[in-house]
Structures are given as structure tokens and as C-alpha cells.
Image (cartoon, rainbow, N blue to C red; front, side, top):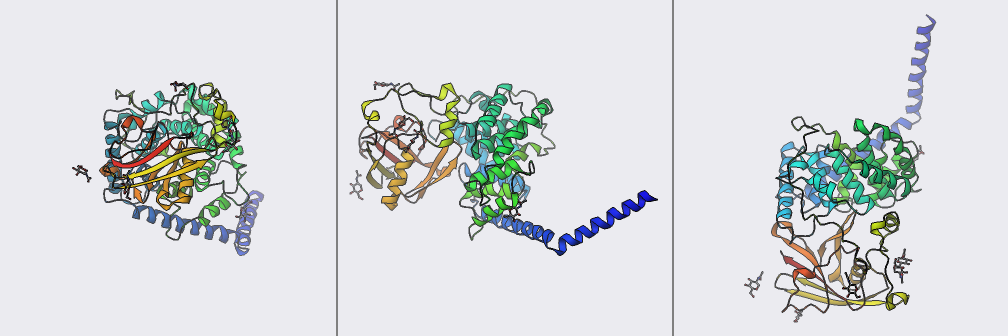
Length: 466
Ligand SMILES: *[C@@H]1O[C@H](CO)[C@@H](O)[C@H](O)[C@H]1NC(C)=O
Ligand SMILES: *[C@@H]1O[C@H](CO)[C@@H](O)[C@H](O)[C@H]1NC(C)=O
Ligand SMILES: *[C@@H]1O[C@H](CO)[C@@H](O)[C@H](O)[C@H]1NC(C)=O
Ligand SMILES: *[C@@H]1O[C@H](CO)[C@@H](O)[C@H](O)[C@H]1NC(C)=O
Ligand SMILES: *[C@@H]1O[C@H](CO)[C@@H](O)[C@H](O)[C@H]1NC(C)=O
Ligand SMILES: *[C@@H]1O[C@H](CO)[C@@H](O)[C@H](O)[C@H]1NC(C)=O
């Protein structure tokens, strides 16, 4: 009797509390802000779909990001997603086939392809005779965030992540304090602990999650659109130590009138954050026919998967990129490059001057050359930014990847993967001459963020058919 009365009383007070809450607007606020988020998410998805090409792709690597966004949110018809997956596969097959001509397939790119394949129940371990996951396990990424992305791709495919790799992830989790490295590592570890063999690692997640939560800024964001979307995906419901709704409002404040968040890649990342469907949910996808823990495949490891440049004893490489990569370097003996100082390097504040040329077309139908002077230790990316300020022909667009910027548009020309038109960067000993064009061996060995320019060098970005 008294028990049932008690229950009755509890029910009444719950009802009253609920009523009180909604009378005073709190529930309504939450409900209406959730409704607004849903509406804006819908607009972002519409914009994304409107950017899709006739071939069902978004062009190049952007297809992997966009496909992840539409697959994880179950946008459109399953047949449409399958057509996009096929288009992406064609792209990747072409890159594997023409590997010495197209821009290098880095571990980060392979990881994105693998995640997008897994999200659509295509096994990346059996990709037309290639084992993409095996390739990731064989070519360990250098930078922390790239390494985390690769580990996430391996785990999301259902493959076993090795002890050594888990150790490196834990090491990053304990020593790194940037949104990008923490966010990537948390997503990877969240996937790894879902495997019953790694349940005991669960408690190692607490520290990096809290560290990441504390990086939320007073405006609600985590720095950039990319970082904020990543942090939201990683933090999810894991902790009370952050404010999800203010992070979401921060994102929505940066939405364009057309529904986009800057470009295809960033919009796709934001969609995953707004939709509560982070990259971490790829592993949970239920693929009825594809068995999750299949036998070790017999597919080939990609032999030419191009990893970040080998450290040469006497070159200066990416010693001073960003705070995160500078600190990323410290832990890894293989990545530390001790540079014997040449005379010009010891002379501080000495500027360097390089020439920067643009050629358009295999037959060079347009050409521009500019001379840029920049402080010591500048990257070619810095040179590009200075050139774009000086001369509008040099205005460019680039996609930001964990391993740096990928330039896809310059002088108003956007790369056209379907017709093999790409922007290729050359580093040359003299000014380029169209009557004696440079050979492929002079293509710059690294990305624009990793090229430290030296006085008197000549750079050429050439838009050509491969
Ligand atoms: C979260 O931030 C919003 C402002 O965007 C604020 O109204 C709300 O009270 C915050 N929530 C918590 C739990 O701090
Ligand atoms: C190292 O520097 C020397 C002289 O500066 C040069 O001759 C040599 O080719 C360089 N080696 C490499 C691997 O870059
Ligand atoms: C990186 O370069 C900037 C100038 O571009 C300089 O101020 C800074 O001290 C450098 N940092 C390191 C770690 O070398
Ligand atoms: C250039 O970078 C090196 C390596 O990070 C650093 O030791 C040196 O001080 C930098 N020089 C300048 C002028 O920033
Ligand atoms: C480039 O020039 C060659 C001969 O000089 C010509 O055969 C070819 O059609 C030209 N290509 C383009 C794209 O204009
Ligand atoms: C560059 O283009 C100009 C026309 O804009 C042309 O007169 C000149 O010959 C070209 N230079 C080279 C090196 O092709």
C-alpha cells in the first residue's frame, strides 16, 4: 500500500516537474534548437547532393568525404549511394593503375577510401585484388592525426589493430593537446575498445576525452569548422565536461546562405557532427551479407603506396609546420631531423626570394610568373598565400587534409580527375621554359606545407593532362 502510494507520488512529481519545465521554456528551448539543427542539417545535405557530378561523384578525394556523409546519414536512395561508391572505386582503381602519374596515394587517402568503402559494405581488404587495410598496416603514417585516421580505418573495416599501434595511440592520447590529434585518437580508440579483445582499454579513454573537452573555447567552437566537427564527433555523449549545444550553435553560425559549410569536404564533416553520426559509427554499420571478421585475405598489398618523404640527413623538412606537428615530432626518433646549419641558415632574419610560375595546359596556353620574397623557414604554402595577395591569378583553393593542404584549384582552373587534368608542382633549378618543359622527376617530393623554400629556387604549378 505505502509502496504504491510512493510510486504514485513519484509519478505525480515527475509529471509536475515535466510540466514546470516546459512551462518555463527549458524543454521547449531544447526541442526548438534541435528542430533548428535538423533543418540546417537538411539544408547542408541538400547543398552537398546538389554538388554531386553527373558521374555520381564529387571529383577526386572529395567523393570519399561526401559519400561518408550521405551513407552514414542514409541520405537518398541506396542505389544512388551504390553508384557513388562505384564511381569512387573507378577513381581509386585508376589511381592504383596510374600510380606514377597521379598525385601520390598517401596513407591518409587510403584510409579515407577504406572508411567510405566500409561504410557502404564494400570490403577494403578485397579491393579488386588489393588489400587496402594491409597497405595501411604496412605503411605507418608519420603524423599523429594521420596515424589516428589510419587506425580508425583499420578498426572500422573489422580488422584487428595491432598492439604496437594501440600503444602509439595511447602515447599520443597522453601527450598531445591539439584538437586534431586528440579528436582523431579518441575516435580510433572508441572503435578499438568495441572489440571485446580490447575492452580493458576503456579507461584509457577518459583522459584524452577530458583533455579534448577542455579545448572548447568560450564561443563554443574548437577553433576551425574542421576541428569543431571532429571534436563533436569524438566527444558525443562521452562526458558532461563540454557543452554540445554551444558547439553546434557555433557551427550553425558559420553556415552559408546556401546551406554549405565552406566546401564539400568541410560540409561533409559538419554533417556527420550535426547528425550524431561520426566517423566512429562506420564500424557499427550492419552489413548483412558481408561477414565482419573474415579470414586473412589473399589480396595484394599496394607496393607503391607513397608515404611521407624519408628523412634525408641533410635536408630541412617540415621542421616548423604547425604547433601540433612540431610537437608531434618530438616523440619520434625517426622523425627528428638534425640539420647541420649552413651559413645562410645561421644568419637569422634573412629573407629568401623564389620565382613562382603558373602554366595552364599541356601546351602552355597561359603563363604567369611572379617573384616572392619571404622570411626564412617559410613553406611553399606561405609563398602561395603571398602570391595570391599580390596577383589574383594566384588565388587558389585547397582541401585541408590531416597531412596538409591539397591544392585543387589555381588561376580559376579546378582539377578534373575524370579527364586526368591535375595541378602538378615542380621544384626547378632554373626558370621553367615552355620549349623545354620539366620532366616528371622534378615534381616536388612533398606537399605544399612540407616544402621549405630556399633562396633562388624556382617553383612551377602546371595544370596538365597526365
Ligand atoms: C551551453 O551553452 C549555452 C549557450 O550556447 C547556454 O545557454 C547553456 O546554458 C550551456 N549549458 C551548460 C550546461 O552550460
Ligand atoms: C647532402 O648535401 C650535399 C652537399 O650539400 C649534397 O652534395 C648531397 O647530395 C646531399 N645529399 C642528400 C641525400 O641530399
Ligand atoms: C617557426 O617559424 C616561425 C616564423 O615563420 C618562427 O617565428 C618560429 O620560431 C618557428 N618555430 C620553430 C619551432 O622553429
Ligand atoms: C628555421 O627552422 C629551424 C628548425 O626548426 C630553427 O632551428 C631555426 O631557428 C629557424 N630559423 C628561423 C630564422 O626561424
Ligand atoms: C598541342 O600541340 C600539339 C602540336 O604542337 C598538337 O598536336 C596538340 O593537339 C596540342 N594540344 C592541345 C591540347 O592543344
Ligand atoms: C607567356 O605568355 C605571354 C602572353 O601572355 C607570351 O607573350 C609569352 O611568350 C609567354 N612566355 C612564355 C615563356 O611562354
